[in-house]
Length: 228
Length: 228
Image 1 (cartoon, rainbow over the protein chains, first blue to last red):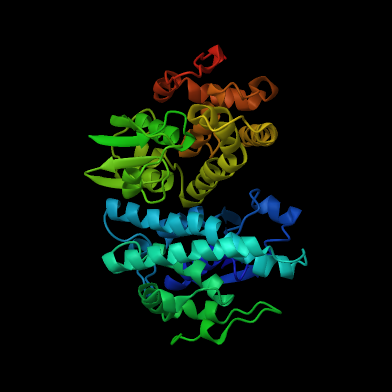
Image 2: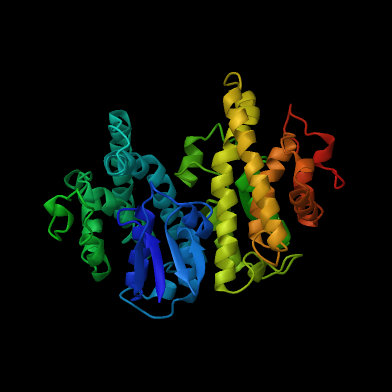
Protein backbone atom coordinates (compact mmCIF):
# COMPACT_ATOMS: atom_id res chain seq x y z
CA UNK A 1 0.00 0.00 0.00
CA UNK A 2 1.34 3.38 -1.00
CA UNK A 3 1.01 6.46 1.20
CA UNK A 4 0.73 10.02 -0.05
CA UNK A 5 1.99 12.79 2.23
CA UNK A 6 -0.29 15.64 1.21
CA UNK A 7 -2.34 18.61 2.30
CA UNK A 8 -6.00 18.63 1.21
CA UNK A 9 -5.92 22.05 -0.48
CA UNK A 10 -2.32 21.89 -1.77
CA UNK A 11 -2.77 21.98 -5.57
CA UNK A 12 0.21 19.71 -6.36
CA UNK A 13 -1.05 17.16 -3.80
CA UNK A 14 -4.49 17.32 -5.43
CA UNK A 15 -2.97 16.69 -8.86
CA UNK A 16 -1.38 13.48 -7.58
CA UNK A 17 -4.60 12.37 -5.86
CA UNK A 18 -6.46 12.84 -9.16
CA UNK A 19 -3.74 10.90 -11.02
CA UNK A 20 -3.95 8.03 -8.52
CA UNK A 21 -7.76 8.03 -8.62
CA UNK A 22 -7.81 8.03 -12.43
CA UNK A 23 -5.61 4.93 -12.39
CA UNK A 24 -7.76 3.24 -9.76
CA UNK A 25 -4.90 3.14 -7.24
CA UNK A 26 -5.83 3.37 -3.58
CA UNK A 27 -3.18 5.09 -1.49
CA UNK A 28 -3.23 6.00 2.17
CA UNK A 29 -3.35 9.72 2.83
CA UNK A 30 -1.30 11.39 5.57
CA UNK A 31 -1.84 15.09 6.13
CA UNK A 32 1.19 17.41 6.38
CA UNK A 33 0.65 21.11 6.99
CA UNK A 34 2.65 23.19 4.47
CA UNK A 35 3.20 25.90 7.08
CA UNK A 36 4.51 23.46 9.69
CA UNK A 37 7.25 21.44 7.98
CA UNK A 38 9.16 19.43 10.59
CA UNK A 39 12.71 18.10 10.77
CA UNK A 40 11.28 14.56 10.32
CA UNK A 41 9.62 15.65 7.09
CA UNK A 42 12.88 17.21 5.85
CA UNK A 43 14.56 13.83 6.41
CA UNK A 44 12.06 12.42 3.91
CA UNK A 45 12.10 15.33 1.44
CA UNK A 46 15.00 17.79 1.98
CA UNK A 47 13.26 20.32 -0.29
CA UNK A 48 10.43 20.52 2.28
CA UNK A 49 7.71 20.44 -0.38
CA UNK A 50 4.52 18.47 -0.91
CA UNK A 51 3.50 15.98 -2.18
CA UNK A 52 5.62 12.93 -1.34
CA UNK A 53 4.60 9.40 -2.37
CA UNK A 54 5.94 6.62 -0.14
CA UNK A 55 6.55 3.44 -2.16
CA UNK A 56 8.23 0.35 -0.71
CA UNK A 57 9.75 2.45 2.12
CA UNK A 58 11.22 4.83 -0.48
CA UNK A 59 10.11 8.42 -0.94
CA UNK A 60 9.20 9.76 -4.37
CA UNK A 61 9.43 13.52 -3.79
CA UNK A 62 7.70 16.22 -5.76
CA UNK A 63 4.98 16.41 -8.36
CA UNK A 64 7.22 15.91 -11.39
CA UNK A 65 9.08 12.79 -10.16
CA UNK A 66 5.77 11.35 -8.90
CA UNK A 67 3.81 11.74 -12.13
CA UNK A 68 6.66 10.35 -14.24
CA UNK A 69 7.01 7.44 -11.78
CA UNK A 70 3.29 6.72 -12.14
CA UNK A 71 3.49 7.05 -15.93
CA UNK A 72 6.36 4.52 -15.96
CA UNK A 73 4.90 1.98 -13.56
CA UNK A 74 1.11 2.08 -13.47
CA UNK A 75 -0.36 -0.56 -15.74
CA UNK A 76 -3.89 -0.77 -14.44
CA UNK A 77 -6.37 1.10 -16.54
CA UNK A 78 -8.88 3.38 -14.90
CA UNK A 79 -11.28 5.87 -16.49
CA UNK A 80 -8.15 7.33 -18.07
CA UNK A 81 -5.85 4.56 -19.27
CA UNK A 82 -3.01 5.50 -16.99
CA UNK A 83 0.13 4.44 -18.81
CA UNK A 84 -0.58 6.32 -21.99
CA UNK A 85 -3.29 8.43 -20.40
CA UNK A 86 -1.18 10.76 -18.32
CA UNK A 87 0.70 11.86 -21.43
CA UNK A 88 -1.33 10.74 -24.43
CA UNK A 89 -0.16 10.93 -28.03
CA UNK A 90 3.18 10.85 -29.83
CA UNK A 91 6.35 12.34 -28.29
CA UNK A 92 5.70 15.84 -29.68
CA UNK A 93 2.09 15.77 -28.45
CA UNK A 94 3.32 14.55 -25.07
CA UNK A 95 5.83 17.41 -24.96
CA UNK A 96 3.00 19.89 -25.53
CA UNK A 97 0.94 18.27 -22.75
CA UNK A 98 3.95 18.51 -20.42
CA UNK A 99 4.32 22.19 -21.32
CA UNK A 100 0.71 22.83 -20.31
CA UNK A 101 1.08 20.80 -17.09
CA UNK A 102 4.21 22.79 -16.28
CA UNK A 103 2.30 26.02 -16.98
CA UNK A 104 -0.23 25.25 -14.28
CA UNK A 105 2.08 23.55 -11.80
CA UNK A 106 4.69 26.33 -11.91
CA UNK A 107 3.46 29.52 -13.53
CA UNK A 108 -0.14 29.47 -12.31
CA UNK A 109 1.08 28.30 -8.92
CA UNK A 110 3.58 31.18 -8.58
CA UNK A 111 1.27 33.86 -10.01
CA UNK A 112 -2.06 32.87 -8.48
CA UNK A 113 -2.22 30.01 -5.98
CA UNK A 114 0.74 31.01 -3.84
CA UNK A 115 -0.82 34.44 -3.28
CA UNK A 116 -4.37 33.32 -2.61
CA UNK A 117 -3.66 30.17 -0.60
CA UNK A 118 -1.07 31.94 1.54
CA UNK A 119 -3.26 34.94 2.32
CA UNK A 120 -6.68 33.31 2.57
CA UNK A 121 -5.82 29.87 3.98
CA UNK A 122 -2.33 29.30 5.36
CA UNK A 123 -2.03 32.64 7.18
CA UNK A 124 -5.36 32.40 9.05
CA UNK A 125 -4.88 28.70 9.83
CA UNK A 126 -1.39 29.29 11.22
CA UNK A 127 -2.37 32.61 12.90
CA UNK A 128 0.31 34.63 11.16
CA UNK A 129 -1.49 37.96 11.04
CA UNK A 130 -3.89 39.73 8.70
CA UNK A 131 -4.04 38.96 5.00
CA UNK A 132 -2.12 41.26 2.63
CA UNK A 133 -4.86 42.77 0.48
CA UNK A 134 -2.41 43.79 -2.26
CA UNK A 135 -1.27 40.17 -2.59
CA UNK A 136 -4.89 39.01 -2.84
CA UNK A 137 -5.61 41.63 -5.51
CA UNK A 138 -2.51 40.55 -7.48
CA UNK A 139 -3.50 36.87 -7.31
CA UNK A 140 -7.04 37.63 -8.46
CA UNK A 141 -5.82 39.75 -11.36
CA UNK A 142 -3.43 37.02 -12.55
CA UNK A 143 -6.20 34.46 -12.14
CA UNK A 144 -8.32 36.18 -14.79
CA UNK A 145 -5.41 36.03 -17.24
CA UNK A 146 -5.02 32.30 -16.61
CA UNK A 147 -8.77 31.69 -17.00
CA UNK A 148 -8.53 33.45 -20.37
CA UNK A 149 -5.70 31.11 -21.30
CA UNK A 150 -7.87 28.07 -20.42
CA UNK A 151 -10.65 29.51 -22.58
CA UNK A 152 -8.16 30.09 -25.41
CA UNK A 153 -6.83 26.52 -25.21
CA UNK A 154 -10.39 25.13 -24.99
CA UNK A 155 -11.30 26.84 -28.23
CA UNK A 156 -8.39 25.20 -30.07
CA UNK A 157 -8.39 21.65 -28.69
CA UNK A 158 -10.69 19.25 -26.87
CA UNK A 159 -8.66 19.14 -23.65
CA UNK A 160 -5.98 21.46 -22.29
CA UNK A 161 -2.98 19.34 -23.30
CA UNK A 162 -4.34 18.16 -26.63
CA UNK A 163 -7.22 16.12 -28.05
CA UNK A 164 -7.25 13.59 -25.22
CA UNK A 165 -7.63 14.10 -21.47
CA UNK A 166 -4.40 13.68 -19.55
CA UNK A 167 -2.30 14.89 -16.67
CA UNK A 168 -2.25 18.45 -18.04
CA UNK A 169 -5.98 18.62 -17.32
CA UNK A 170 -5.54 17.09 -13.88
CA UNK A 171 -2.76 19.58 -13.01
CA UNK A 172 -4.86 22.56 -14.11
CA UNK A 173 -8.04 21.29 -12.47
CA UNK A 174 -6.14 20.68 -9.22
CA UNK A 175 -5.10 24.34 -9.13
CA UNK A 176 -8.56 25.68 -9.94
CA UNK A 177 -10.27 23.32 -7.50
CA UNK A 178 -8.20 24.51 -4.52
CA UNK A 179 -9.13 28.13 -5.28
CA UNK A 180 -12.73 27.15 -6.00
CA UNK A 181 -12.88 25.87 -2.40
CA UNK A 182 -12.11 29.47 -1.38
CA UNK A 183 -14.82 30.82 -3.70
CA UNK A 184 -12.22 32.60 -5.83
CA UNK A 185 -13.06 31.47 -9.37
CA UNK A 186 -15.34 33.79 -11.39
CA UNK A 187 -16.58 30.89 -13.52
CA UNK A 188 -19.46 32.78 -15.11
CA UNK A 189 -17.09 35.29 -16.72
CA UNK A 190 -15.26 32.45 -18.52
CA UNK A 191 -17.84 30.05 -20.03
CA UNK A 192 -15.33 27.91 -22.01
CA UNK A 193 -13.15 27.44 -18.93
CA UNK A 194 -16.25 26.61 -16.90
CA UNK A 195 -17.35 23.99 -19.44
CA UNK A 196 -13.90 22.38 -19.38
CA UNK A 197 -13.84 22.34 -15.55
CA UNK A 198 -17.35 20.91 -15.45
CA UNK A 199 -16.22 17.92 -17.52
CA UNK A 200 -13.31 17.30 -15.12
CA UNK A 201 -15.37 17.89 -11.99
CA UNK A 202 -17.93 15.24 -12.94
CA UNK A 203 -15.32 12.49 -13.30
CA UNK A 204 -15.36 9.88 -10.50
CA UNK A 205 -11.70 10.67 -9.76
CA UNK A 206 -12.79 14.13 -8.58
CA UNK A 207 -15.36 13.00 -6.02
CA UNK A 208 -13.01 12.55 -3.03
CA UNK A 209 -11.63 16.07 -3.55
CA UNK A 210 -15.11 17.55 -3.51
CA UNK A 211 -15.64 15.98 -0.08
CA UNK A 212 -12.53 17.59 1.47
CA UNK A 213 -13.22 20.00 4.32
CA UNK A 214 -10.66 22.19 6.06
CA UNK A 215 -11.60 22.85 9.72
CA UNK A 216 -12.93 26.37 10.18
CA UNK A 217 -13.13 27.26 6.49
CA UNK A 218 -16.18 26.06 4.60
CA UNK A 219 -16.38 26.11 0.80
CA UNK A 220 -19.31 27.78 -1.00
CA UNK A 221 -22.16 25.42 -1.93
CA UNK A 222 -21.08 25.57 -5.58
CA UNK A 223 -17.73 23.92 -4.72
CA UNK A 224 -19.12 20.37 -4.59
CA UNK A 225 -22.08 20.99 -6.87
CA UNK A 226 -21.72 19.44 -10.32
CA UNK A 227 -24.21 22.00 -11.64
CA UNK A 228 -22.21 25.03 -10.45
CA UNK B 1 18.13 19.66 -38.09
CA UNK B 2 16.89 20.82 -34.72
CA UNK B 3 17.34 24.36 -33.44
CA UNK B 4 17.72 25.33 -29.81
CA UNK B 5 16.59 28.82 -28.79
CA UNK B 6 18.94 29.52 -25.90
CA UNK B 7 21.09 32.03 -24.10
CA UNK B 8 24.75 31.02 -23.54
CA UNK B 9 24.75 31.56 -19.77
CA UNK B 10 21.13 30.53 -19.10
CA UNK B 11 21.50 27.43 -16.88
CA UNK B 12 18.45 25.60 -18.26
CA UNK B 13 19.66 26.22 -21.83
CA UNK B 14 23.07 24.84 -20.84
CA UNK B 15 21.49 21.72 -19.39
CA UNK B 16 19.81 21.00 -22.73
CA UNK B 17 23.02 21.68 -24.67
CA UNK B 18 24.84 19.17 -22.44
CA UNK B 19 22.03 16.62 -22.94
CA UNK B 20 22.20 17.06 -26.73
CA UNK B 21 25.99 16.85 -26.73
CA UNK B 22 25.98 13.71 -24.58
CA UNK B 23 23.69 12.07 -27.12
CA UNK B 24 25.81 13.20 -30.05
CA UNK B 25 23.00 15.32 -31.50
CA UNK B 26 23.99 18.44 -33.40
CA UNK B 27 21.45 21.22 -33.12
CA UNK B 28 21.59 24.76 -34.45
CA UNK B 29 21.84 27.41 -31.75
CA UNK B 30 19.89 30.68 -31.90
CA UNK B 31 20.55 33.20 -29.17
CA UNK B 32 17.61 34.82 -27.35
CA UNK B 33 18.27 37.40 -24.65
CA UNK B 34 16.31 36.54 -21.47
CA UNK B 35 15.88 40.25 -20.71
CA UNK B 36 14.54 41.08 -24.18
CA UNK B 37 11.70 38.60 -24.83
CA UNK B 38 9.76 39.70 -27.92
CA UNK B 39 6.18 39.20 -29.06
CA UNK B 40 7.51 36.80 -31.74
CA UNK B 41 9.14 34.69 -29.04
CA UNK B 42 5.91 34.65 -27.00
CA UNK B 43 4.14 33.27 -30.08
CA UNK B 44 6.54 30.32 -29.87
CA UNK B 45 6.55 29.94 -26.07
CA UNK B 46 3.75 31.86 -24.30
CA UNK B 47 5.53 31.37 -20.96
CA UNK B 48 8.40 33.50 -22.30
CA UNK B 49 11.07 31.18 -20.92
CA UNK B 50 14.19 29.51 -22.30
CA UNK B 51 15.11 27.03 -23.65
CA UNK B 52 12.91 26.07 -26.60
CA UNK B 53 13.79 23.19 -28.94
CA UNK B 54 12.40 23.50 -32.47
CA UNK B 55 11.65 20.05 -33.93
CA UNK B 56 9.90 19.56 -37.27
CA UNK B 57 8.50 23.13 -37.11
CA UNK B 58 7.06 22.38 -33.65
CA UNK B 59 8.28 23.99 -30.46
CA UNK B 60 9.17 21.90 -27.42
CA UNK B 61 9.08 24.51 -24.66
CA UNK B 62 10.86 24.35 -21.35
CA UNK B 63 13.53 22.24 -19.76
CA UNK B 64 11.22 19.53 -18.42
CA UNK B 65 9.29 18.84 -21.66
CA UNK B 66 12.57 18.94 -23.61
CA UNK B 67 14.48 16.45 -21.50
CA UNK B 68 11.56 14.00 -21.39
CA UNK B 69 11.16 14.41 -25.17
CA UNK B 70 14.83 13.58 -25.64
CA UNK B 71 14.59 10.65 -23.22
CA UNK B 72 11.64 9.29 -25.21
CA UNK B 73 13.05 9.77 -28.70
CA UNK B 74 16.84 9.77 -28.74
CA UNK B 75 18.18 6.37 -29.66
CA UNK B 76 21.72 7.20 -30.63
CA UNK B 77 24.23 6.45 -27.94
CA UNK B 78 26.84 9.00 -27.03
CA UNK B 79 29.29 9.04 -24.11
CA UNK B 80 26.19 8.67 -21.95
CA UNK B 81 23.82 6.17 -23.53
CA UNK B 82 21.03 8.68 -23.98
CA UNK B 83 17.82 6.69 -23.80
CA UNK B 84 18.53 5.12 -20.42
CA UNK B 85 21.33 7.52 -19.64
CA UNK B 86 19.33 10.63 -18.87
CA UNK B 87 17.44 8.75 -16.17
CA UNK B 88 19.39 5.57 -15.43
CA UNK B 89 18.15 2.74 -13.23
CA UNK B 90 14.78 1.34 -12.22
CA UNK B 91 11.70 3.55 -11.82
CA UNK B 92 12.43 4.37 -8.15
CA UNK B 93 16.05 5.21 -8.96
CA UNK B 94 14.85 7.35 -11.86
CA UNK B 95 12.44 9.14 -9.52
CA UNK B 96 15.33 9.97 -7.20
CA UNK B 97 17.39 11.29 -10.14
CA UNK B 98 14.42 13.43 -11.22
CA UNK B 99 14.16 14.79 -7.65
CA UNK B 100 17.81 15.86 -7.77
CA UNK B 101 17.43 17.38 -11.26
CA UNK B 102 14.38 19.28 -10.02
CA UNK B 103 16.39 20.47 -7.00
CA UNK B 104 18.94 22.16 -9.21
CA UNK B 105 16.61 23.32 -11.98
CA UNK B 106 14.10 24.90 -9.57
CA UNK B 107 15.39 25.31 -6.04
CA UNK B 108 19.01 26.18 -6.85
CA UNK B 109 17.81 28.36 -9.69
CA UNK B 110 15.42 30.34 -7.48
CA UNK B 111 17.77 30.60 -4.50
CA UNK B 112 21.11 31.21 -6.22
CA UNK B 113 21.21 31.64 -10.01
CA UNK B 114 18.32 34.06 -10.35
CA UNK B 115 19.99 36.42 -7.87
CA UNK B 116 23.52 36.23 -9.23
CA UNK B 117 22.74 36.11 -12.96
CA UNK B 118 20.24 38.96 -12.66
CA UNK B 119 22.53 41.24 -10.66
CA UNK B 120 25.90 40.40 -12.21
CA UNK B 121 24.96 39.65 -15.83
CA UNK B 122 21.48 40.58 -17.03
CA UNK B 123 21.31 43.98 -15.29
CA UNK B 124 24.66 45.26 -16.61
CA UNK B 125 24.07 43.83 -20.10
CA UNK B 126 20.63 45.44 -20.33
CA UNK B 127 21.72 48.65 -18.54
CA UNK B 128 19.08 48.45 -15.86
CA UNK B 129 20.99 50.17 -13.09
CA UNK B 130 23.41 49.19 -10.35
CA UNK B 131 23.48 45.69 -8.88
CA UNK B 132 21.61 45.10 -5.62
CA UNK B 133 24.36 44.08 -3.20
CA UNK B 134 21.90 42.48 -0.76
CA UNK B 135 20.64 40.22 -3.53
CA UNK B 136 24.21 39.22 -4.42
CA UNK B 137 24.96 38.47 -0.76
CA UNK B 138 21.80 36.35 -0.48
CA UNK B 139 22.68 34.38 -3.62
CA UNK B 140 26.23 33.73 -2.41
CA UNK B 141 25.04 32.60 1.00
CA UNK B 142 22.54 30.14 -0.53
CA UNK B 143 25.23 28.94 -2.94
CA UNK B 144 27.36 27.66 -0.04
CA UNK B 145 24.41 25.65 1.27
CA UNK B 146 23.92 24.07 -2.16
CA UNK B 147 27.63 23.29 -2.51
CA UNK B 148 27.40 21.52 0.86
CA UNK B 149 24.48 19.52 -0.50
CA UNK B 150 26.55 18.46 -3.54
CA UNK B 151 29.34 17.39 -1.18
CA UNK B 152 26.83 15.47 0.95
CA UNK B 153 25.38 13.67 -2.09
CA UNK B 154 28.89 12.95 -3.42
CA UNK B 155 29.81 11.21 -0.19
CA UNK B 156 26.83 8.84 -0.46
CA UNK B 157 26.72 7.99 -4.16
CA UNK B 158 28.98 8.07 -7.21
CA UNK B 159 27.00 10.72 -9.08
CA UNK B 160 24.43 13.23 -7.89
CA UNK B 161 21.35 11.31 -9.01
CA UNK B 162 22.61 7.83 -8.13
CA UNK B 163 25.40 5.43 -9.06
CA UNK B 164 25.39 6.33 -12.75
CA UNK B 165 25.85 9.70 -14.45
CA UNK B 166 22.65 11.16 -15.83
CA UNK B 167 20.62 14.26 -16.43
CA UNK B 168 20.66 15.15 -12.71
CA UNK B 169 24.42 15.72 -13.06
CA UNK B 170 23.96 17.72 -16.25
CA UNK B 171 21.30 19.93 -14.65
CA UNK B 172 23.47 20.64 -11.61
CA UNK B 173 26.64 21.18 -13.64
CA UNK B 174 24.77 23.56 -15.94
CA UNK B 175 23.85 25.75 -12.95
CA UNK B 176 27.33 25.72 -11.46
CA UNK B 177 29.02 26.35 -14.81
CA UNK B 178 27.04 29.55 -15.48
CA UNK B 179 28.07 30.94 -12.08
CA UNK B 180 31.62 29.66 -12.55
CA UNK B 181 31.79 31.91 -15.63
CA UNK B 182 31.14 34.80 -13.24
CA UNK B 183 33.88 33.57 -10.87
CA UNK B 184 31.28 32.89 -8.16
CA UNK B 185 32.04 29.32 -7.09
CA UNK B 186 34.35 28.89 -4.07
CA UNK B 187 35.46 25.43 -5.27
CA UNK B 188 38.37 25.12 -2.87
CA UNK B 189 36.06 25.27 0.15
CA UNK B 190 34.12 22.25 -1.14
CA UNK B 191 36.59 19.57 -2.31
CA UNK B 192 33.98 16.82 -2.90
CA UNK B 193 31.83 19.15 -5.00
CA UNK B 194 34.95 20.25 -6.89
CA UNK B 195 35.92 16.64 -7.61
CA UNK B 196 32.42 15.90 -8.93
CA UNK B 197 32.42 19.03 -11.12
CA UNK B 198 35.89 18.19 -12.42
CA UNK B 199 34.62 14.85 -13.69
CA UNK B 200 31.74 16.56 -15.51
CA UNK B 201 33.86 19.40 -16.83
CA UNK B 202 36.33 17.06 -18.52
CA UNK B 203 33.62 15.28 -20.54
CA UNK B 204 33.63 16.10 -24.27
CA UNK B 205 30.00 17.28 -23.98
CA UNK B 206 31.21 20.19 -21.82
CA UNK B 207 33.79 21.57 -24.23
CA UNK B 208 31.47 23.87 -26.26
CA UNK B 209 30.19 25.46 -23.04
CA UNK B 210 33.73 26.22 -21.90
CA UNK B 211 34.27 28.14 -25.15
CA UNK B 212 31.25 30.44 -24.65
CA UNK B 213 32.05 34.11 -24.30
CA UNK B 214 29.59 36.88 -23.43
CA UNK B 215 30.62 40.24 -24.97
CA UNK B 216 32.08 42.57 -22.36
CA UNK B 217 32.23 40.02 -19.54
CA UNK B 218 35.21 37.68 -19.51
CA UNK B 219 35.35 34.57 -17.33
CA UNK B 220 38.29 33.93 -14.98
CA UNK B 221 41.07 31.74 -16.43
CA UNK B 222 39.92 28.85 -14.24
CA UNK B 223 36.54 28.73 -16.03
CA UNK B 224 37.81 26.78 -19.04
CA UNK B 225 40.77 25.17 -17.29
CA UNK B 226 40.29 21.45 -16.59
CA UNK B 227 42.83 21.72 -13.78
CA UNK B 228 40.94 24.48 -11.94
